[in-house]
Structures are given as structure tokens and as C-alpha cells.
Amino acid sequence: MACPDGPFLVRGDVDIVLPDGTPVPRTRKTVALCRCGLSTIKPFCDGTHRASGFRTG
Ligand code: FES
Image (cartoon, rainbow, N blue to C red):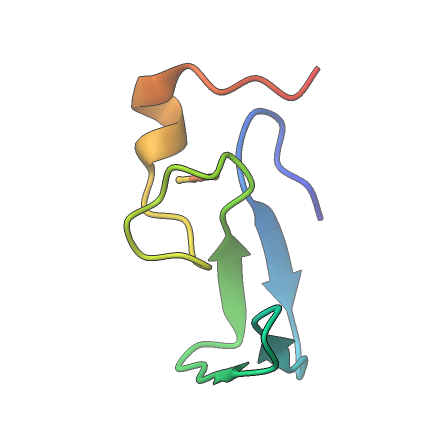
């Protein structure tokens, strides 16, 4: 699910893999993936999108 002006929320048993093929370990069933590009913990969202004024539409 895409959050308005925020991350993608991913729920369930889904593997997350970086573009270079490196698997990303998950510790939670629901994770928020950054789509603003500004997170310091990519690929996960750290909330920076709020302060940056990121808009999706
Ligand atoms: S979407 Fe939240 S930090 Fe990028």
C-alpha cells in the first residue's frame, strides 16, 4: 500500500532485495519502504519524508 506523501507499506511474507541482489533482513511483518529517497536507513522509511515536504501527487 502506498501512503500518501510517504512510504510504501509492505505486509506479509515478502522478500526484500536490493537492486544489487542483496537480501534485506526483516524483523517485522509490516515494514515501511522509503520512496522519497531521503531516509538514512534505506530501504526503510525513517520519517524524513515529513520534514522534507515530500509529495506524491
Ligand atoms: S518515505 Fe519516509 S523517509 Fe522516505
